Structures are given as C-alpha cells and as structure tokens.
Length: 106
Image (cartoon, rainbow, N blue to C red; front, side, top):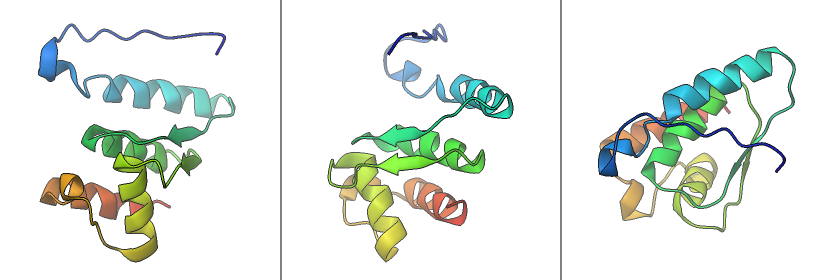
C-alpha cells in the first residue's frame, strides 16, 4: 500500500464497529465513477463484513472471496454456491437477508 485513508466516526468501543461502512461506500462510489480501478478482497471477516460486501456489490465493484479463509468470506461463498449457511455466526435473519441481497447483485 502506498496510501491510507483513516476514518474516525467519533464513536468508541463496540459502537464504532461498522461505523465506517457508510463513508467507505460513498468514497468508493466516487472513485469508481472517476474510473479508478477497484476490487474488494474479502479474507475472513465478521458479520459487519456482509454490509461491506453488499455495498460493493450494489456499486458493481468486483469482489474476490477467499472462500476457505473462514468468516464472512466463507459464508458468502457458501451462500452463493449452495444457498445455505452452515456457520451459526451468520444464520441470524439479518445476516441471511444481506446474503440474499448479495446474491441478487452478483
């Protein structure tokens, strides 16, 4: 990496988790519209990673899943391939809803 963009929402602790997703989506949308090549690489990840994957999918950004890395990467890959979720961490209704939306945008 040659550049980093640090985002501070002002939130702390567990409230801060996922608070960067909205900014990230807007920033990436702006870069994609300017023709900047972009790809989302998903290695493992927790439930909030589903939101990042969904926002990237909606923008038409290519997504590379390391499907054997576990976490969200494996859950998305499994859902896209089989339409099922074996990981209890991703079986909550809100997670399945995001996985369904990701599948629609593939």
